[in-house]
Image 1 (spheres, one colour):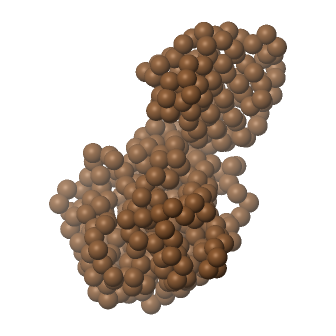
Image 2 (cartoon, helix red, strand yellow):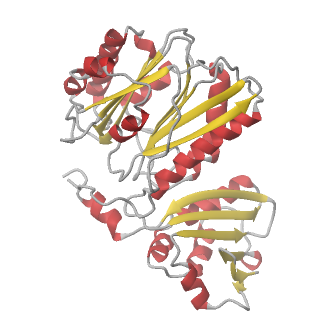
Image 3 (cartoon, one colour):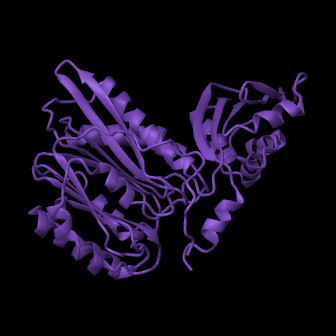
Length: 409
C-alpha cells in the first residue's frame, strides 16, 4: 500500500482559520477501517430545523452510500441532520453488502443521536470492491456522539483524508443588514478527480436559514462552475458527494436572489476545488486553462477539458517543456468546433501562437522560463465565437504513478 508522507509542494502554509458554525458540531475517532494510528471516521450533527442539499457523482457504478444519500435528499423534515463519513474503504461495488453496511451504520447513528434514519447521511472513501468493516465504524459511534464539539471542523477535515497530503478547508463571512452569516467547508480529494464530480467528499456548513430547494439550486449551479471544472487524471469516482447544511442558527434568512451569499458560497466552493487540484497525486504545478472564442460555452469547456486531461500536455508541464504543439493537438481532437487558422495560444502573458502559426515575437527560452513557475496559465482563443470556459488541473509526474501503482496492494 502506498504511504503518503510528503506534503504537496502546492499546499497552503497552514489550515485556514474557520469560523464556528452555530447549530452544528463535529467529532472524529480512530476506527481502524484501513488506516492505523490516525482518525478515520467523522460525525457531524446539525440541529433540528437544518436544511440539507447535495450533489453527487454521475458514475453508473455509484457506491451504496451515494445511492442512499440521493434517495434522502429533498425529503421534507424538521428534524436535525447527521453526517457520518469513513475513510479507507469506499463501500463501492460491494453488492448487497454495501447497502447492508449503509443501513447498519445509519441505524446506529440514528439511535445514538436520536435522529430519524432518513436524516442520517453517510459517505465512504477509499478502496473499491472490498466490503466495509462497518462493525468497526459502529463501535465508535457512541464515542463520536459524546465528543461532539462546534470547534472540531479541522479535525473532521483530517479524518476524511485518504491519499490527501493535507487537510482542506475554506470559509467566508457575508455581511447582511441583519448581521453576519458564516460559511465554512471542508473537502478531501487527491486522485481519481474529474467531473462529474470527482473522487472527492465535500461538506459545507452555514448558519444561515435557507429553504432546502433554494440551497439545492445554489450548490447545483455553483458546482458546475467549480467542482465540475477540475480534473487531476480524468477518472470519475464512484463515491463523489457534496453535502451542504444550513442550520439557521443565525436567524438570518437567505433568499434565492441573494447575490452576496451566493458569491461567498461560490468563493468557498472554488477554493476547496482548487485545494483538491493543488493536492493532485504527485502534482508539482497548478494549471489554469482559459478558453475563449469558442462557438459556445459548452464547446469551450470541451476544449478546455481536452487540454486539461491530455497526458502529453500534463507531462510536458511537469517537465517544464513549453510544447505548445500539444495544445494544438488537444484542441483538434476534442470534437468541438475549431479553425486551425484562427487559433491563438498564450502561456501567461507570452503570446506563443497566433492565427494558426507561431507568433513572430515568440522565443522558446521565454516559454521555457515561464514553465518553471508552479502556477501555469494557458490561454487559448479559438477565434470563432463568444464561448468561454475556465478549468483547473495539475501536471502529471512520476509521483502519480508511485502512489497509484500500489494503492491497493
